[in-house]
Amino acid sequence: MAEVHYLTADGLEKLKQELEQLKGPARQALSERLRFAIQQGDLSENADYIAAKEEQGFLEGRIIELEQILQNAAIIDESRKTDGVITIGARIT
Image (cartoon, rainbow, N blue to C red):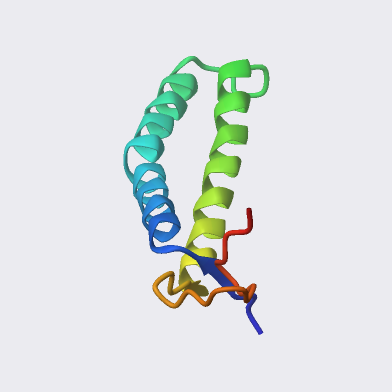
């Protein structure tokens, strides 16, 4: 069974924006870096290529993580506030 991730509406929107950024501009920029590094020649001793491949692994891992979080997200209803009762989403001061 998948772990439920409790998010506010704002938190959900921030994660969606991050995922969109990673899948679009960030992935495209990394692709260009990889292409440039490959054109430099010998990949076994190419530090730019090795660094770009490592970054690609982190990027793809974060994309998978965000997709799983969004798939199993439960939105916290902040309008259901009860005085004196601590529930998920309650703010304690």
